[in-house]
Image 1 (tube, rainbow, N blue to C red):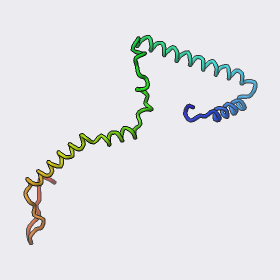
Image 2 (image 1 turned 90 degrees about the vertical axis):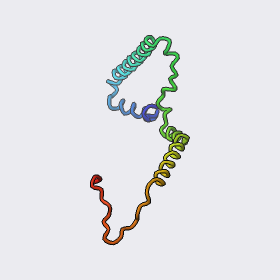
Image 3 (image 1 turned 90 degrees about the horizontal axis):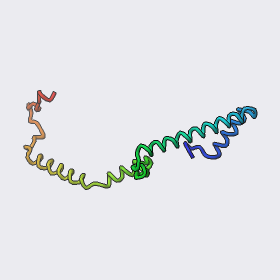
Image 4 (image 1 turned 135 degrees about the horizontal axis):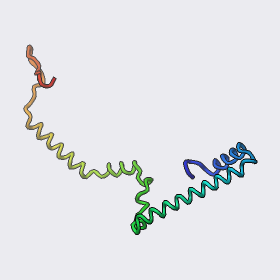
Amino acid sequence: MFFGITIEKLLLIGVIAALLIGPERLPRYAESLARFTRRTRDFLQGAKTRVREEMGSDFDDVDWRSLDPRQYDPRRIIREALLDDAPVATVRAAQAASVVSAMEAAPARKTSLTAGERPPFDSEAT
């Protein structure tokens, strides 16, 4: 049902409410609950007719299932994005090619210093 409330839980809530309210006030509360339910149903029906009137014939053309937020499963969206690797592969290949060409164009670096030689220092980098 709604919000994880099953029929058993709803009946238990009703029994506890009947015991707390008592037999003398129970008919009055049941009547006000029925009135509230009726007003809510009328309000929702009026809202639906207003929307139908304002949208006109477009209201019947709307595919309401496509607008259901429950269809947007984040796991499915991520899985599809990860499996769709065609554009990513071309980008990675282009990046790898640019890295290789940059490595080939860069001068060979010295890995060790001779005795008394100072390490390179860039004053603009600090």
